[in-house]
Image (tube, rainbow, N blue to C red; front, side, top):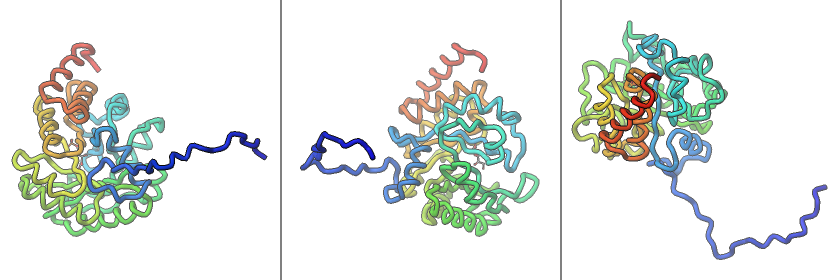
Length: 295
Ligand code: 5RP
């Protein structure tokens, strides 16, 4: 029997309404508690933005430059990311379970750079995603690609699986070699993914009219970094994307192939979370290099 509580409960705050906060992500207000909580592990509730560190490239191209030893290149900088985007193989074999940031798990695969890339299947069960505490599952979607319909079907099946368990779905718009990476294509691809139920969408930044891509997509967009650029250009890309409505960056090579991955990811954070200009972030990057020339 618990001890009797002698103090009468009297703090009812009558007349003060219980507030319901507006969720910090576009298009996510009517999602369930579990999914909103997982999304808050990806997108910082204070800024509504995310720095995702993508290093899942090995799932179709093997040991990519900078990812030969994920234990040495990624684990030391993981703490600077809000979220890791990776395969379950690397998660289990290399990432310490003490990592507490968000996890976005690659959920499709099956083709390699030696063959037609769009020929993918679902490559994880929802049980394993739950077991690994995934916040979201990432599905490659090839709009206009040879296996377009199959990849869209992968997306809708993962969305259904994820919705049953409160796990979000990230649709990754993959642009085939013959397709133009322009705003018209990105509007088409991102909108199709959102209409079919993706919780958020990853796409490429377009030099022209990127705002029309973010504006016409009813759920958050994060941008891929793409091929390695000089640090100044990569920070400019991140800055423009955020200013033009992206909710975050899901950057890989421009971080882990940088001369200083630790300095670069911290500079990217400054742009994404603090609204710093590319120039300010580059100065910060350089100052970190001076403080610690080797990382
Ligand atoms: C592979 C991916 C990668 O995660 C993505 O391309 C991000 O990495 P990068 O910034 O190197 O482009 O989605 O399909």
